[in-house]
Length: 378
Image (tube, rainbow, N blue to C red; front, side, top):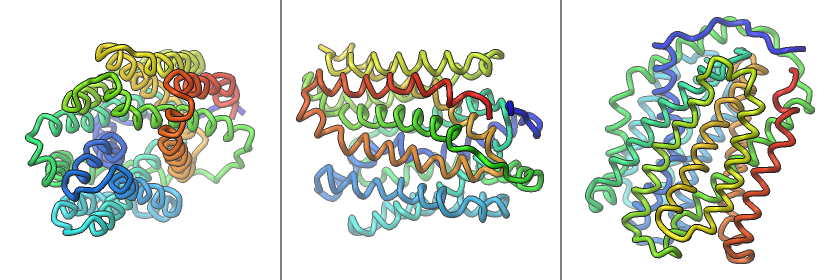
């Protein structure tokens, strides 16, 4: 069976509302280096403890996406409001929690609310066979919002960021709270128009998940080692953070790959080219000899990631009927990101820079042969 769409295209206003909701839902991954650094300085703990607390937010998103999607789809308008306001409140509350454990509880609550917003966005895009352009707009706009916040936060005085980073995040997202809270209308339409759930064969879904896991694991591993590699290149620590923030912002341009009117028919070639670019840049990153190469290689990996993501999410949306499949698929990406982060340090220690670069490059290139099946017939 070939892809077929049963729902009309989203209006620009709807896309902007969904972009704001998606920005709030996914900010934790982009802002994680900032959050981890602030927790380390505020509580005087090591990177392992701060990363563990930060990961609770990701765990909260995964729980909502894995357990609650169909329940959320029954009342998306109301829950979009609750999730938006709940996210802002939980973000701000993290600034006043007296202990690291208490902050961890607030981060978990933040993630649970953010996961609800992700489900709302997923349900809004469900059952749209050629949703690349819609996902491209959402990922581009939300990425610009999140990355701009990261750039601004790194430009602020260190003592303000250390103590009030969560208030800064909450205040920034309060500016887009209204469109985010009203994004549930499209998800409500999706629930009302949902057609009977079709059987999805594993031979179709598994290649999509494999491509997602390989791409996300490479991105997360390189991101986790960015500070280590930067210090090995003797780049001043105060330059590494702003450089990564700028890389994230500029990398969102990759999402424009899905905006071309022929993007749907060219999607296999675009994804393969992006995987090839990511693999080569990942290897080059560990062979970099200065700040310029460090910045360029990070930018190329980020660009490739943003180029691939709209096509992967769109492909799952075409197979989805109510957003549950895409919401649960995001758990796969979190597992991949966790694995990539967890093994990155060990790989660098055991294999050295060249060996680690070859391993990550191979992971990215391994996604290429699965692309044909991932974007084949339904």
